[in-house]
Amino acid sequence: MSVRIIVTRVQPQAQHWADRFAARGHETLVLPLIEVRGLNNTTAVHAAWQQMPGYAAAMFVSRHAVDFFFQEQPGPLSTGKPLAVQTTRFWSTGPGTAKALLEHGAAPALMDTPPELAGQFDSEALWQLVQTRVRPGDKVLIVRGDSVAPDGSTTADNDQGVGREWLAGRLRQAGAQVDFVVAYQRGAPFWGDRQRELACDAASDGSVWLFSSAEALGHLRGLLPGQNWSSTRAHATHPRIAAAARDLGFGVVTQSRPTWEEVLASVESPA
Image (tube, rainbow, N blue to C red):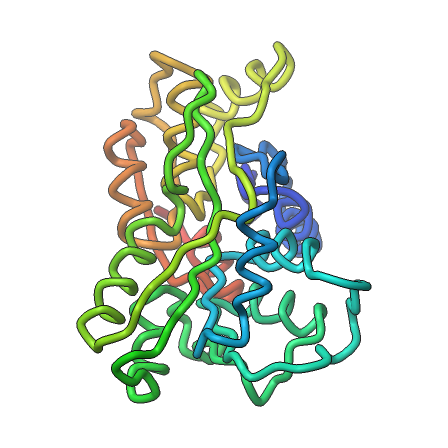
């Protein structure tokens, strides 16, 4: 059975997922609910690079964290080539972020990420993998983003925020020192009349809205205030995201782990 799927992920991942759904015979509409941009001031990122040899591990919250952090790597960029010296372990919570690290020259032997077959890509799964390696006195760097509000104010990004703080707490309990560095900014997209019209139609035409971020749901609330979602189906890839979809008023909310196979199976199944 063909399903119309609204893909809300940040680009270019949104188009990648949409193409895979389309290859399965589903109509897709790409409506990214998060935009990502670089920083005006990268002084802190440069300082983190200088201090990198002193860190036992650096944890990256997303592929964007990797790309923007490595964009500021001192000296000639070595994308696709092994890093000249790597003693710091690189942590990631999912295969997409791990792939980005490899593309930037990270050594596979010094990378930690939950196995793809595990189907759970979050801080809890990463901690299960690395907790026995953490020693009192270790320094761990967490590379993250900031969320930019419409008024221009910034807060720690909401997408990985809960899990990131949970991981930092576990590290501190193990005696490690945790430092943070902001490498990029996330914000709501600008929608014109056409995007708003498409989104309103998709709220009542039987489409399935796919969410991989609670932050995206917050942006949707701001972009379409007062929209009735009671007859709309949402699919979420984490319990926190599912809760946010219910809070916004989606009438049917399904959930699966974030693997491609499980998301596809869920959206193809009757709600």
